[in-house]
Picture 1 (tube, rainbow, N blue to C red):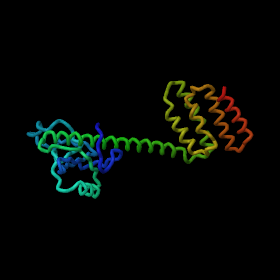
Picture 2 (picture 1 turned 135 degrees about the vertical axis):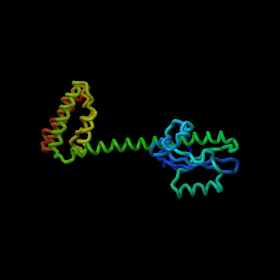
Picture 3 (picture 1 turned 180 degrees about the horizontal axis):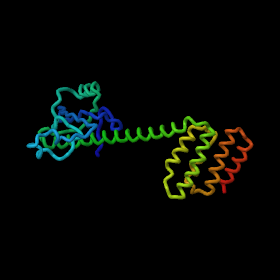
Picture 4 (picture 1 turned 45 degrees about the vertical axis):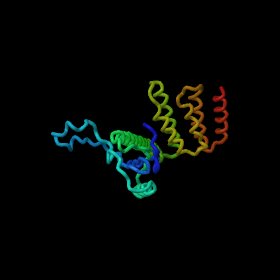
Length: 240
């Protein structure tokens, strides 16, 4: 997909409808493109006698007119019109309007590029929304638990990770759960530190994880002597 020159709007957040303009001498020629949020099977709406004249392709955008028409106004007035309507404005460059086939081809290419840009943007927005909803749902699963219950949940998840690793299964969802739980705990519990060891590949991983969880319990119980002992133990394990 080629770069699109947005005079108004942005490829990072296209509106889904745009005026595409071209310049020939001092004249401006325009067309309008709309990227459909759905795909339309046009064959459903064409009489059978004409069906074989319609390309076997679903319609996901429309460009009207297919050859740019002359715009009776300045580029400034076109900008104002697009701003008022909330349209993107795309600079198509120069054009030879007398070469209608070439003009149509250039417009069609730009219209396709714009449509692709819209689809990429909305696909990414949808994926992010799905991901964020998933994370929020996971956090909500643990949000009503007390701190001791959260720490018990972490101990249970770590045990499950060991089982999954032994059976060569994915641990990504369990890591995500621990990450979400850690965000619900006070930062000084340092539960996030165990994320580096959950793949159990590093030396002393299991012992370090166990020590961090014990340290969190000790912080919760305000047993600071035990906390200090466990911090020394963690330091020794990490350096060996």
